[in-house]
Image (cartoon, rainbow, N blue to C red; front, top):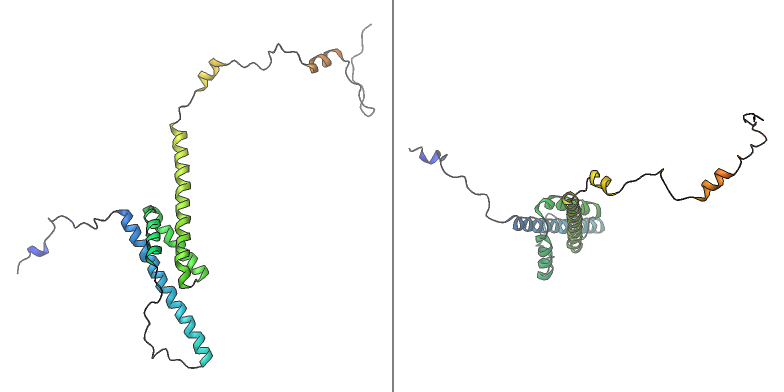
Length: 195
């Protein structure tokens, strides 16, 4: 018995996948949609069986075979969803799936509504991607913008707030007017005038 097949340590490791990340995101999101649609259809079938069981009082579920899925996406709708899924960045794939599952748990939609819910989640993710890209672009613009130093600002303009050649009305009034008399409740504090 040869040990050579067991000792394959010198071979190159196998590649995981030759597909692009965009293809993997597309496939992952569409598989999630298909699986959730199957689950929604199963839940809908269980609800209708429970209602039928309550109405008739007889349970024939052990006799019935599992029916084939009855609802499927139209080719046009599938292509539109695939087009939107292809625009999703790989880092947003996981949060999109989590949000989709959260909305499904909250609303418990019918099978026909699952694709619309999925489309709304994808639109939310695309909007979030766009907002973050714009914020990143603004940050990049501000970081690459040339900054003027304070030294160059000082040489261009001298600011002296107390040295002004412009006469104001308040200066004239304050200089020529006697100090205002105090109110009756306040005593006068004036230095005696030397005559």
